[in-house]
Length: 409
Image 1 (cartoon, rainbow, N blue to C red):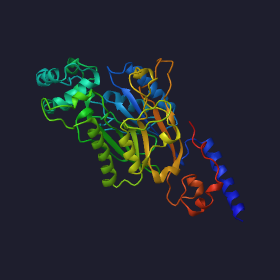
Image 2: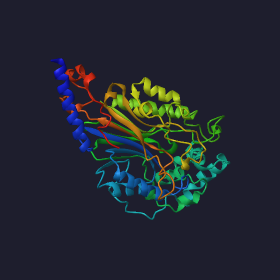
Image 3: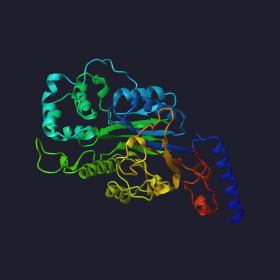
Image 4: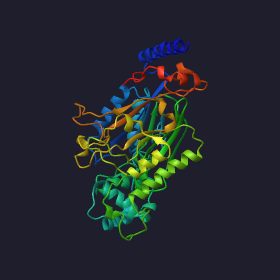
């Protein structure tokens, strides 16, 4: 009788797999992705061409929910929203994506208001360039930055094409609403969306939250990384006290903020997506970055299915856009809780090739996507498949077929 019941279960589940194969958009599964777009003008080239390829690839993608990072400027975010709205009808950002700015001529900064900031950066950040120069300015000229209009300070921070400060005297202020560089784009409704900053000024880091029925409570974020040489944090303060004594301290503050958000916001099924700028060492030349904080995520009950099921670098030395200047790391993750790992159908890399139309990758990062079986109230074995929720399915789980082919790339 037991064997007959098990075979019946296997047959019915086989039907489910066949049905899911013919309908990749089935409501039983959700595919999530995180992707650092690298859309930073002046630091990573060919922004417009890469953005065009990215949008085309997202249109063709089977991903249900994207968490994007480094879409820094408001005009870029609104373009992504306009082009993808027919395919991803739900979107979230720290700005109103569906309302175009009424003023696109007023510059981000006025000459007289930024003289003190320019002088401070010239004095305290001499010898630095690129991102290091932008970060240095926020850390060593905090007092001067706090006097600026938000659009002006954002422009100066994100003006990572090194030292051409005069750009911010002409670039429209409407480009520099505070975005944190983050977007959530979804085919499923985003419930109770929020956007908040971390408790720091460096690069305007923050996080987005939203709930998706049947999927979980999403947190889309981008944590800090060592962008500049250690001397920025070593020795006595030059102008004002530093916000943090090290990049590790800043990173820790951000990680702990996320834990507090989960604890205090009534989040039931947390799923964290983003560029976390931490990860473990793996075979194939992948080195660790801030491994303590990756371990801390594990210790707090979070696991990155991509690390376990794939484990290739996401920020890679052989990506043409990294210039071979940095070692290969796994720093892009989709974290789920350890008690929900049975939901995982697959985890893999995406947007990880050179596209002939541009001759490069769309970003200096590769993306990560994870397919999860959905959560359903009063679920049964046909509805939940691998995500066991009844005693009956747990009893006969050894007889279940392999569901690795349920969701499709």
